[in-house]
Amino acid sequence: MTDSRIRLLTFCALLSAVTATPAAHAKSIAPPPAGRVLLGVDRLITYHLPQLQGKRVGLLTHKAGVTGTGRPTVEALLDRGVDLRALFAPEHGIYGAVEGGFDVTNTTYRRTGIPVHSLYGKTRRPTPKMLAGLDVVLVDLQDVGARFYTYISTVCYLLEEAAKAGVAVWVLDRPNPIGGLRVDGKTLERHRLGFTGIYPMPLLHGMTMGEMAWMLNEEYGYKARLKVVPMQGWRRDMFFGQTGLKWVAPSPNLPTWESTLIYPGLETIGLHGFLAEGRGTPYPFQLVGAPWVKDPEGLARRLSDEGLRGLSFIPCRFTPAADALKGRRCGGVRMIVKDARRVDPMRIPLKILKVLKIMYPGAPGWQDAARSWSVSLGLPGGAGHLLLPGAEDELLRKWRLGAREFEATRKKYLLYKVDPGPRQVD
Image (cartoon, rainbow, N blue to C red; front, side, top):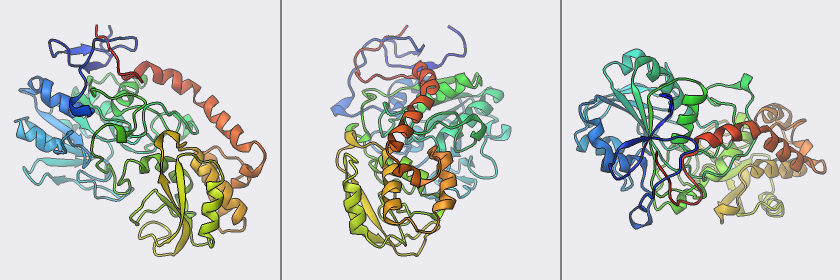
């Protein structure tokens, strides 16, 4: 086996680190207690803390970085005597209170005075000075399964810089809240890569943070000393609501795990102030509307007739307290997830645009917004294109074709099955 292959920490008879390969099959791992998925951080604490003895440790985490019992990971490590020398904060900050897109400042951790280095401010990469004096950086971040959610980019930059500094990286794995089977949406072109799209993949990638880190480390050739502490009892067909874990918002506008089903699609069409997505209301990424929507009841009826399974639509009026439409009264709908298994996240934006174009063809902003939709959705000619017979199915077909290369790559790095049955270790 090559040195660049990921080190996968599993609970085997000797409780030792083993090397995982894409073709590996496995010994049985006991089910988690009381039907609850055992997180990577829980397995680290239960089985692998001795491997941190004598090491100077950093931790990249945030508000949602908690154990299965809800104890913040940083506190759980301090309680157990881990030599925690530095913390690193992603977008939204270590306490998860900073709104998206706003810089996070350097600070200190309130209990101990440990420095908290911002990776979403003047720099988005850990500097050599930040990494100096560390042997390993642990990563405990809750991702949401969407390409433009920036935590995977932060981890990617960490891998690159840690490799240069000779610092190991251990990813404490967590569930993808919308499951590990959905690969959907337009694939990002290589010339558009950046912090909100670190790898040419579809909008929904269907991977956990540990799997993603493994893929990025290998495909970009960073050769970081990467280890993943996997979960126990998680299956690819699981939604977060099936894990037995309590949801902690990974960012201010995702207060429920169900909102992560709606967020990816809604974010693609809500940019530039054309539509309100519910930011600054009690129901972020559950509401959609605009000041020019005068008939919320009609909008709800039409969307209900569009075959968006697993969702119900309630007419409403709301006034956002954030973003471009702040303070403006909007008509729209609230979307409620009734059956997560039936929800198709990437059909949601297409149906919303189609119905709004039918009902409000003269609304302001269609032309300007269309330019962003050509990038995010691959939608030619704006929302009017969706009114053509077969246009929606053709767009979905193009997405599937565009995802083929990524799916072939992704397959090599999947650590979990649909069936949680026996895994093998070498």
